Amino acid sequence: MDAISLSLFSSRIAAVCDEMGAVLRRAAFSTNIRDRLDYSCAVFDAQGELCAQAAHIPVHLGSMAFAMQGLVNTRTWRPGDMMVVNDPFQGGTHLPDVTLVAAVFVGGDCAGFVANRAHHADIGAAVPGSMPITSRLADEGLIIPPTLLLENSEVIQETLTWICNATSDSVLSEGDFSAQISANICGVKRLQTLVAESGLSAYNNALGELNAYAERLSRQALSEIPDGIYHFEDVMDDDGLGNSDIPIKVAVHVQGHTIDVDFSGTAAQVTGNINCPLSVAAAAVFYVFRCLMAVETPACAGAFRTINIQAPESCLLNAMPPAAVAAGNVETSSRVVDVILGALAQAIPERIPAASQGSMNNLAMGVRCKHGNWDYYETLAGGMGAHACGNGLSAVQTHMTNTLNTPIEVFEAAYPVRIKRYCIRRGSGGSGLYSGGDGLIREFEFTSNTDVTLISERRSH
Image (cartoon, rainbow, N blue to C red; front, side):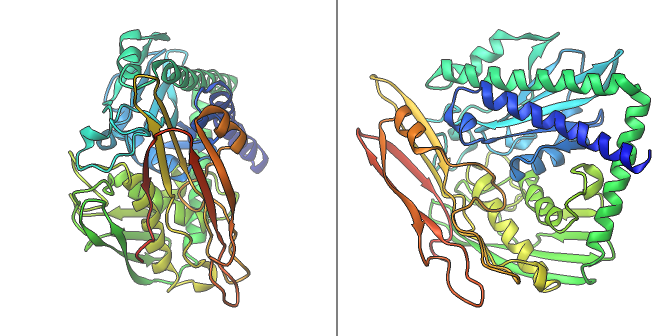
């Protein structure tokens, strides 16, 4: 393909993901998906390798790219099949993130898959917001192994009812799942059109060229990092259940354009919920190195082929069942970014920013009572680290998340809560030649008794 044709192909396949996201947002019932945009969409080839993704949430997308090959090989796919899964140890991240994968067939052949992942504020945990402080995965909500949700393009009602009945508001839950199904159906149709225009063979050849181009750009970017082994260590404040100062260690070995990331020496998995499956750690690694690549680098498997990741089994970053993982996806992934950046700062200090807030500040709330149930979840923005060319940004989501805030008007109209104050915490980012970005103050007034869970980090260190 010539350069223009390859660029058009890359844009068209990425547009499939963008349109899927637009459908999901407009059809969703919950504020978490509709207003905060806590979802991600991607396209994969017939082997489960990443082809394209929208600019959604890094922890969703990187983990899908890492785990999808194993996930699509769990069954024999047929036209009209769509799978649902949230099990962190079988392709998921944490239980609130529910993934739907749909097969794309053209002329009787499997051309690939489309997938979307959305955060459900209620996935059946006893605690409103489904982000409990617990020691077992089973206590964090409904565990959905890879399960067929649509067969021959028809919803398997028994499966959908089983999932929705585990939540406190089955109507809202079914609305969100319908939105996810619709987004995948849209993606299937758009990808079928794209493949049919050129034929499956030409489409696969184009994917091959796209991956080769991405790999060339990746190799060029990564080769600019000086060869060497760069070490860094940081800690998690605690796991909520008595363990504190939990170390995460990394050695980044750079040799030409090949990167080996080794987390040996990281703490063993802990009692609390800050454990994460290897796919989540991989998402953080992919994110950091993607940021070092040229902006035009296609978001496909070829961009990450020279990055290798190792983490000891049963450690904090490669946890085994039945470990709790609700906060690993949001908090531990943030610290993985910090240690990778800390290691790379020794090699290319002028290109690496100072640490950002290092937490997603997860706030879950709601009520379980006979008068009515409600669940809400949000992450709170903070300061971004300064860099060699200027100040850090204030009051933004940093690194592994990419969601919006819920507009106050929407929040207050939907829930028995008032926002009394919402402003920038001036001067909180620290001063220097260039200043770090400032964080937030967000003050809530509850108009009735409410259960609240706060999961955050960087309070001790």
